[in-house]
Image 1 (tube, rainbow, N blue to C red):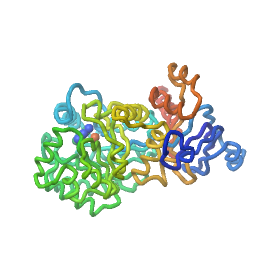
Image 2: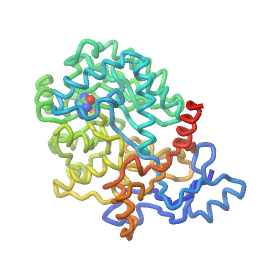
Image 3: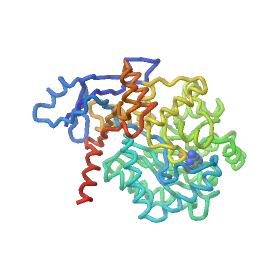
Image 4: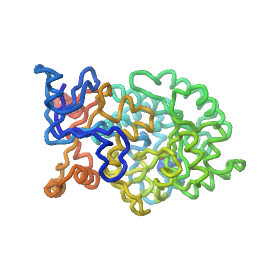
Length: 439
Ligand code: GUN
Ligand code: FE
């Protein structure tokens, strides 16, 4: 398959407003895909010669072709809890989220939501995501089964919680360990699945569960680890009161040996320089969740301090604290959150972050996040004129940077013209499935 259009793919993190060395852009470009992989990306004239005359062409001109977008933190059981009114983090969890997640004890419910969840990601151009499932192991089966049915590279894991949550959502340290172990054996490395060991956060895990998490991380260095850190002032006070010996919130996780370069820490808003330096040393990744941080009134992520102290960071939706599955809308809010602090986010830096930047945060940049030869053919096609106001605005746009900024500021799922997972067109597939059901 030859996917034709205006191709944009990054090779490095952009430095400054138009660092042309950080990306490759082909105005009449094409991606030659075979067996689910990218064979070659470049100018249409060159790539089509390599592909030969017999190859099928998907002509997306004048749309943009980018690597599939990547979301590094969200909650699959919160798909139907987006827009839960009025509360900050701890009250929001107790009032809405810990009620919603109990529904996932029913495997049929988990399976139905998992299907919808994957389709929402794809509609928004997201081809890889890192999600928390519920405490129920069946929710992980539902999650990875739905990903496998679509061929998606997905990361996820069963949340572990053994205190400060309703009975129906608590496991025990031993149960959390055993169930996680079984799920890793079942899913990690099967097709495109990756497992994430997922103690929810310090408030909902006892020291015994932290020790069990430490054992899991030590026994499974191939897996990711994910949790939440320093999102809200009441949360920080509660967490540190539960671990009085820890120097600070970050030290709770550090003491249990959880920090490594495969660890993702959601939010990281109120960290001291000491804490960010600890993250930097360990290679752990702070995850910036702008729509969630605004929606829950949590606070503003200080990217410049992460950069200055040499700590890694990524971006994510954090659905359902986050309000949208769209990485475009997420970067729009990221821009504003940074702007409020006098920090700039350039359009190229934004699009780098949703693709190669997030792929690097996951250590998956050989496979996803860019369209180099040998990469997985996970691709999104973006239409910068999908909404009438955008189309009108685009008439005055004079550069690629301006177009990207319009896409980010005004765009959403309506701008996703097509999405390919391992070389398969998923929008076409979905339309086909719907037709069949009608017959
Ligand atoms: N901290 C612990 N659990 C959660 C969650 O589900 N969402 C958010 N935003 N923060 C959390
Ligand atoms: Fe979260």
